[in-house]
Image 1 (tube, rainbow, N blue to C red):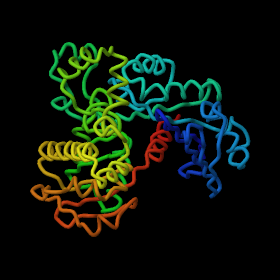
Image 2: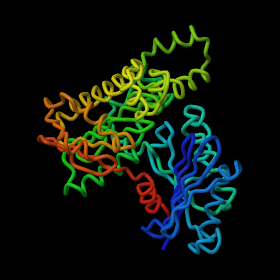
Image 3: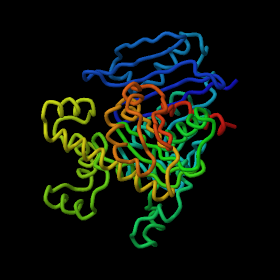
Image 4: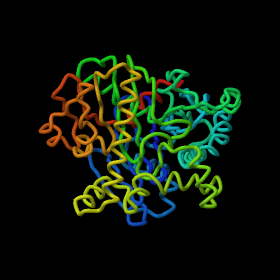
Length: 390
């Protein structure tokens, strides 16, 4: 059976899983805690959290292979047959899952200038993996946009001159596709089959809403980059292009500075001026903080707007799915989102909702099914990687 390592990098954390055939036998989560790197490993049924040296965060693959050898899962690094890594990048080229070669690396180097905060960590990880395992290791690039390749042109193109869209490859690609693919697969297993008209709300640090018709994506709230769409933890979401120009002038920010501003200083953090954490904002709201209340209202309002938009595109809705850390864990946010959506047939059972925190559940009291589904991006990346390998 094939042995393969799965990698999912973020700007502030990294996740790894190791599979033998279809079975996950190891996982690791590298993150910063109180300014220092830590790793949480699950191996042979045991969970261990430990501090590591700053260089250990960078050299995570070496730590993982050492743990796999120590746990007698492999005997040497050459036992690893292939690697799969999540890729977040704009461009037609990245709408396809591919084995990574020199052409892929060149395309990724060009694309990283467009989305450095999302693609940069993955590209650096790719280089380290190639160096550590050697040039012969197969590496699969699993696209976060591939699931959205079915979005029709009417939803894909911006209203700029079409020649510019085509020459520059500038259109809406959509993201969170791996997560959406995972949750609709799990939803189909949960309720027997996937209905025709599905709306998926992936609500975490990054957030998106996707319209799925007959199992295919036809709209996603994210666009050319993962900045577009919903209010996110620190990302701006939708904003008038004229406002971007005005901000550049008045704040004296160049392209790079605006990129950091829109990715790291906006969203819930910017609106509240205090936190990007939904739980903290809800506590602040209870204590009378007006800006925290405003941040939550804008957050929920934007999600509801996109649910309405997708219901119009789909011609109704049969199933509403909540996924991601906020979607899974915040019964309060779910209730606010579903409030007054009964005109769409979306009616939430409040008792079920309040008793379903961090668990998969069916929450509807009306004709539209409402599910909480736990996304498993790592498993989805593993499936795609296995299928791509030679």
